[in-house]
Image (cartoon, rainbow, N blue to C red; front, side, top):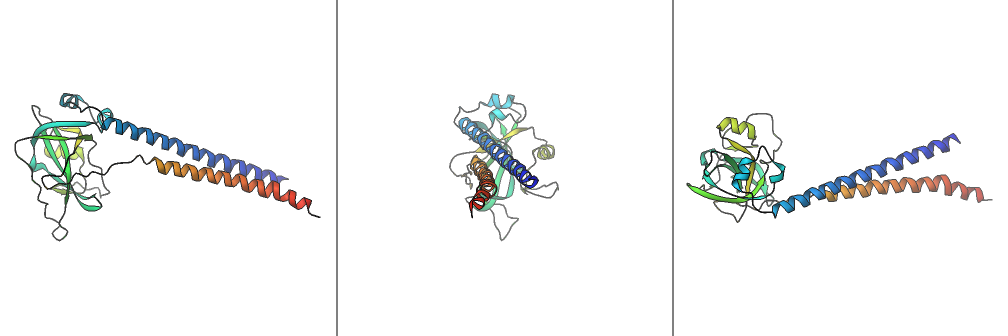
Length: 238
């Protein structure tokens, strides 16, 4: 009798835990879907005006992913080539150049695009053209370039694995904004701009939810079969 009670308690706990984990994954998937829909809505909203961008304090989440048009002058000597970045599954560089905003002292980092690297002469920089004089950059507001795994060393020089905004600000003395601009449009100046489109990732959570619920159902079916159905069948046998 005690064994049956222990099995029943274990089954109830197993069903409850797996069902709860399924609900948690469902909630995570719904959150990711909502965030992705908000990001998509921002991408189709009106462009952020430069005064609004300059007035923003810190990396204002309300401005992320919104389109923007910025006029200014490239600071070509501060261009950084971020290594081990892919576009169309080909490794190369993300090219990042600071842009001094017109009629302002503020500077914004622009993720200008992708360029291939020379794997024979790894120290050679790709032939990227950076126009002198005023330019107009169209794109979307984005966080600074994502960081890849690297040892905790302070990188310098044009080729780097990562670009830490605070360190780069201290290194250059530039009044960099917290947000960056991911330049859009067709490829030019030796750069491709076929940026990967980020998905919501919600399908993984929904898949995990289904797996947890399937396990919950399996526990219930096994309990009913081995603890209720099978003993009754055996009892009916002569």
